[in-house]
Length: 339
Image: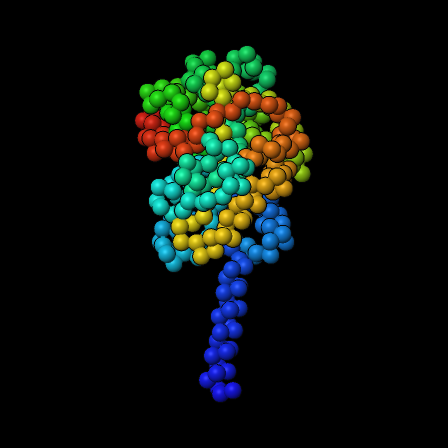
């Protein structure tokens, strides 16, 4: 064999090896930073033989990265919390449609994009926590009721720029119209116990310390605190009561973490396999047990802790409608001086 033939053979061998390696991996851009996700990626690797490479950053940073990288992006898949982020990724043409009977069967229609560009994987319910010595459950009702002057000086929340609050306000716009949403936001601000600050866990602590009497938080923060290794967190979480709003109306607002295949994915089929795995009962159980989120797959039950919160009626408004009003929510919050 000539030298040139040996070189060609070696080159072809390298090309085949390179193609094989490329076909056996997936590059994930993820906004999520939880131990549950590491467990899930490890489980997928063992099950499929496909290596999962993960880059984590804030959602806005990942979206910007995808825009800048364009066709040269190494990302095959985007995972992020909050419907607003998923909606923006689709609007910016950073995702592509997925054809998957498995995903359509596992994820309810209101938790996925109508063009199948993103699919919800976990749910968080946005509820009230309150001090039972200061607030009676009979006083509580819908989100709109929080603008009632009877709550003046009692309400706690994080800033309106927080993704979960933007999406909550967007859901109120979608359900009740812009005028009602503005009226709600103004009333909410008028009833604040203090200026918005901190995360949802800080709101729970502020209720327990008496800084305010009632706060808006996501359920999974409560689950995390109830299972904390810090006894003080457990004590605080046990001291507050929880309430699922809008049970006589549209239902409690829920938000999601979800995933989509990026527009220029080099490992598209692997990305679809991973999202399908994450929607499976096996993976959904890990999401639920390790991070206290509600499974998006209705065949899977909530974790033991979350199950004690009780059943509730959830708002089944298609989340794409919520994403549509996210920018309007920012305008309304600004008009209402909700910082």
